Length: 142
Image (spheres, rainbow, N blue to C red):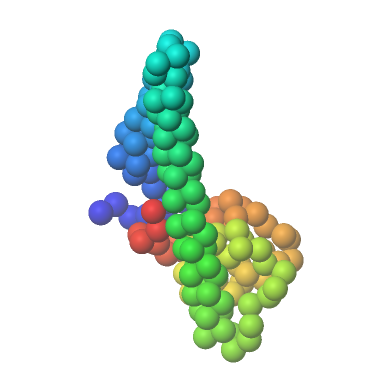
């Protein structure tokens, strides 16, 4: 496996982000076209197809959102514990969840200094990731 860096750390799952998304969009477009061309006899079933397509789209969106939110909570707890182990004090409440998520890639050697810099300069998640010199891979997040 290739070493993880800022340039390659984001992960796209082809089956989910590509095939499934395109399939649901195709289903939605096709069902809308079917609804437009429907007659009085099949209006109800054509309407249900549009509804089901829309439900699939929402389900795809929310299943991803809910999973990421749970991962964000876990990352926040892990990084708070790591900071406490390294310093003996609590992580600053001034850091946002997005900043903490960016900090998770920092090695232990640069983590504390980068936390201080992020609080002092209000660095964004992207700026924090770019400031990391010794990247610590996170291969479990999807």
